[in-house]
Length: 296
Image (cartoon, rainbow, N blue to C red; front, side, top):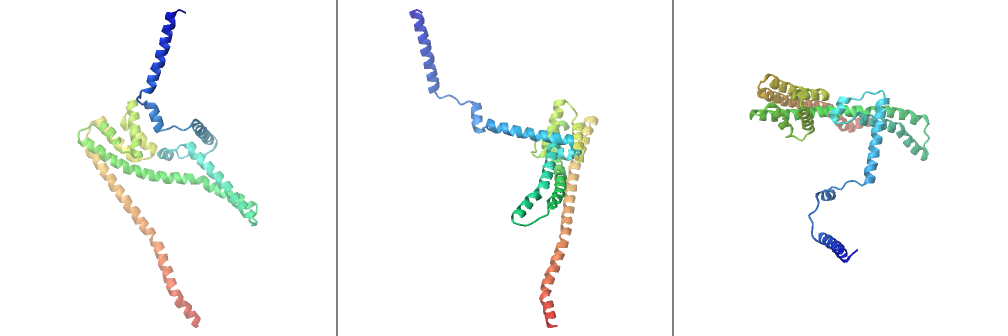
């Protein structure tokens, strides 16, 4: 290696080191990726792997229960509530197991403090509790589905009002449906948004998708919206008045339903009030009756 090559290599190495030193000393602009990672840190790999294994195990157990158990889950109600059949059956199985073994815990505690209990008692009580706990998720899903459908009617009434406002400004029915759906943030608006966006991607018909959504969730009001859209797209008719009147009728139906519910609650309170009045009268008359018996 001659002198010139040695000088060139030494200069290159020295220049590279000086460039790296200057690059480290000068303030650099923060990178977007690491900054976002610091603001929203991801879970550690161990926690993420553990959560993935747990979720996978739960889904596998749920799928096995769906295949093995001769039970038909209420899929429409579960779809309305955003739950899966696997999760529903897994909850039923866990509650049944809890009800089966819960009496044994109390019997063990009673035995430790010296109370003798027959061995068949926890088995009988456990079987009864297991059967009761097995049907608890069904009752809860049915109750929540009724509330969700009532909320859906309220949300669709507002949705129809928004659609009517956009139709009044001269917007086409297809655009009015999409714009009105993106105004709200409730779950009803979210489901309509997803349906309309999926229809746009697949280049399908809006009225067909809305009717399918209403039948799947058992919300008949959505099928009315689908009828309005079909009437406008196929026949070219103006549906502003129809949409407006349907929204008003929905509000009237909701007010009547709320008034009926309030009247029913008022009637339910009459029996406790009558019992309370009888108890108060008995308490007031008790001293006089007791004195009368003492005098005789």
